[in-house]
Length: 377
Image (cartoon, rainbow, N blue to C red):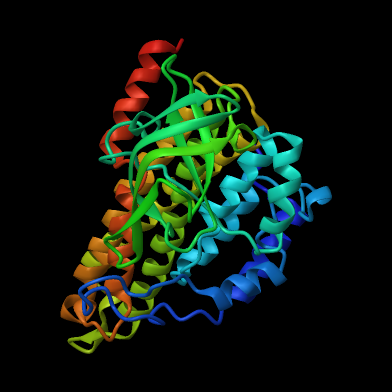
């Protein structure tokens, strides 16, 4: 088994580290101090830098202005972004553009991908559904109407919905087929209501009332939504890993300087054991993440479909990042709750990522269903 990253993937990591080095985790008001969203928009200046460094086009083919890399490269960059709590729709826009490249028509690719690669077109995905518990595609109905489609329903907790140019909305037909509709943010029949996430970011509740979309803006390929959902979940695991690593690094630095009885608290056995347990959590989060990203990138076969590896990764990501931030809060004492210190922000981000695209329990159920349908041995 070879865990070595390619030169291109390593180059993407180095570029990401250099770019995110200047990002301040406390660059916006604290979610603990403001009643609504911490900001009206994502970090546009950082977005422009990502575009200038070609980090928005990692997954796109060279013909569309991209580097032609894979989901592993994207996850490596997402991991670095989360260490600094970078407020950009990197996961959503990259995953949506990659889905268009993989499953969209040639006309759709030529119309969307070059602009997405340059950062001029921002995409997001309505992956939460109506409640966050039911499959997202069941929250919206899609019915063919002449040469177009009519969509009705509701999608909640859509990240960056008020700021994206296009929103990818999964929907289901009367035959039970899942389709992907690419809807402009400003469109007749579409309303976007404000919601706020656990980490203080602005979310959108989409209400679709007979939204008419041309046939060219709907991806009907079987499996496209399942694939996109798996990619989004895997990217969320990468973000959780980055948050966890940032928190553990912060905790290590603090406990090595904080003294009690004349010694750094990091030298106390109880502190060292707790930190070691969280380190093991992070390594488990990491290995399951790369397994899932590898399955998506290579379409390699396995005992279970790739969705099984994604479920395992999300179980570890959800439970692991929660344990990491809880231990960090404990080892920091009251200092960890100080709103002038960034740890509480990481805690809020960790809770948001833990629940995004389903908590551990939801993926445990999905994994159980897969094991029942594909007995091992």
